[in-house]
Image (cartoon, rainbow, N blue to C red):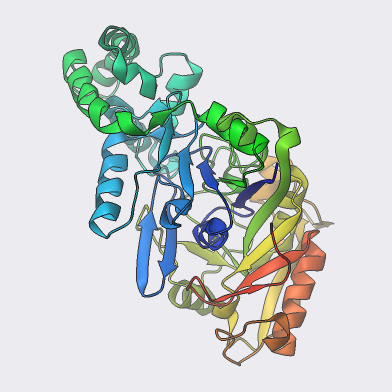
Length: 427
């Protein structure tokens, strides 16, 4: 039962799409288990670049079955648009499976997300405004709309009425917005039913049967560990669990079936949105990382905040996910620096702290303690083996591996599918 979890070990945007795509030719199923179209993956195949938001990256690998699990929230219009765009480019999307238990992002969820974020003003979280949080809130409040509800108009209408009963009160009386009509929402959602029906399946059954048949299943997390609703930098987090445990609940497989957990690490650190970021740079180095690394959000279009590698965060990700391996991405971006700072600890109120503080207040006050590592100037994009890397680049990778607490089994030396050094096989 070779089941692998692949997830972000920082604040997201680490290059999970490339890692998933790299493994796609060796796996039978690739499963998104949480999040929605607030997650963006860029995959480069040859001279073609694909920006995926909701679909699993495995959809680009022939022979691989992509799955949207029950833990994902689905915006039908975004999903159908993404499928249409891939079909126009000659990508076969017919094998996609969508859990009937996945929740639907409704038009009113998007409205609530946008008006709430504006209302918060300077206290805003930095959400994508795509209705992700309100949809998960409806799920927990048991007024959510699931994919299977699109095929029972009576149940769908009852659920929309229940959800809007309170939301319209909030929209009209608190935010001075117009009420949303139940029949308009129901009509729009029913319009997606026939188009989605060929993809809808009991994905929990499908995946467990696949594992029993010794198929290789890869569970792909969106966002990153530090954006996890329970284990991230709360409240500046997403609304679900990108950490490894989320794969079990978000796809319906037991933890004993997971054989390997792979964390994706960028060779430096980035994040999008508000929240603490100890190694963030506001100088020329930060701008250089942003420019060279093309650090702009695939989904949001926002510039990413950039900083040096944070080993404290990497160790934390290893612990909470039970990581067995790391995939280090974008090592090539660091080419050209004479010295590269790496954050090895924090200083908080004059004290050195080597583990992530559980206190939100302490983390906000954390200052990075850097260790300087020698850089390199050689082009590493053509490297095929670890030995092909300059010695200083090798030493940098070894140092990050030792500090992070898990072996680095693959290294990205460029954006292309083939610009990867594989040290140890993941499968």
